[in-house]
Length: 329
Image (cartoon, rainbow, N blue to C red; front, side):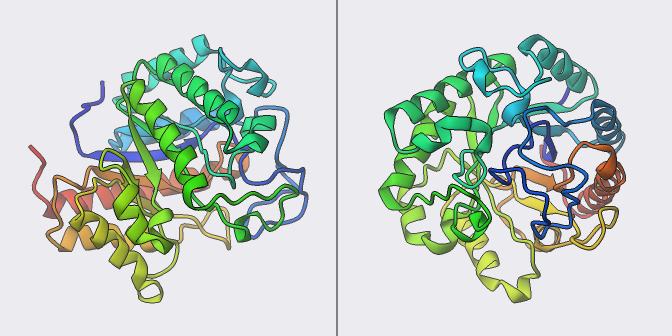
């Protein structure tokens, strides 16, 4: 069993994948992914469980202790079975897999992305954002997931990249701002907390609206800052991280290891550099809950090697971090 009070070394794993485009797009989207091999969205679950098992076994070998599972269309939600794609895991099958992960010493944490840029998995309900019906559906699937996961302590709600630019190839583009965004966001946070979990979100809203963020973002929400370029090209990222820490927010930063050049290559980015900064600088340790590996690899044969290399790289970072930082008591 994973120790729930241990410093977190997590890996973001995808079961659902209907969250990057809203139509079957055979042309490259700029991420170095071969859309001719796997297109999205799909009415079938495309996760290869043999790759999934290879990755989770490798996580256990590297002593990573958390799997953040992006569910999307790959789970049958009892309250809304219409969201499930063909081949989606039943609640019973999902529980069996969660028990396997726990047996490996890996704590399973659910993720559903409620960003307007990554919510294709919500099907027709994604066109109802800002309505009572939308918030009701979100609350119901959150309750389903928390019951299946056995009241998880954390629940990643995504909420990243809600911009027109990130949806430039979409057929249906929505960007919520101001009160419209906060109303839906806080409703999701409330649904998570009512089910005994703690919301965890990507910290995009802090970039352009830090004053509003500091006024309205609950301290209960764990922050997941991310940035995929070097810090010298994006000093605002480092500043936003430090501002959030000074304001008292807990954080589990994203450490990304993807490459747009080769699906087998590892390209370190600001997430890795941030880990180094935490190693070298005396940030408040009680606010740093851990790190989350985001390799943006999908559990399919095409990305098997990329995922394994990312896990090995992250495991090495973990050992280097622990060599110079005192163990958390």
